[in-house]
Picture 1 (cartoon, helix red, strand yellow):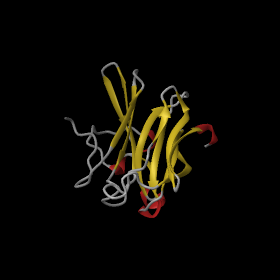
Picture 2 (cartoon, rainbow, N blue to C red):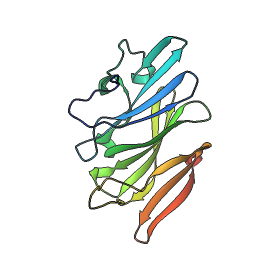
Picture 3 (tube, rainbow, N blue to C red):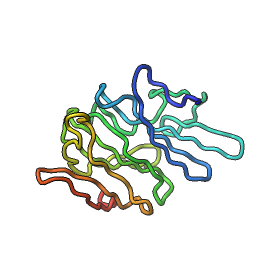
Picture 4 (cartoon, rainbow, N blue to C red):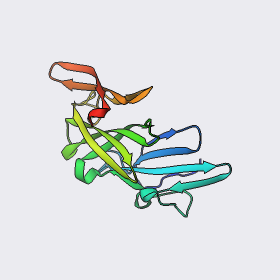
Length: 178
């Protein structure tokens, strides 16, 4: 394969969405939550016929093709500020801009938090949604939350799994509250 993202000696995670026309958005982490501080970054790819353009920080054109490193990507969520971060999903909203659902671990501990992020202009805005509860696998995978995802037809609707002392439940949230 062709390298897209390079962070030496770290495990990176990727989520991607394509508009089936001329644009793809990549959200990537720079680490794994159990291995150190983890932030989320964005790189865009646009194309027109045979021309391809990579965009990094705040939509500026990257003069190089990948591999890209975090210093040239747009920061979505800073793990040093909100705790380790995990990408759950990225999609295009009705206005054509990307939106994302993220999990964070304030103080790098549980309970985790769910967050909503949207690209406004060239800056990502993030909003806290709720306490996600504890891990679904506390013995083996302490950073695994129940999960959060967009409705397949409407990014203003979000389904989330929330854990508390009584168990786990699935809830529906309208993202317009963010």
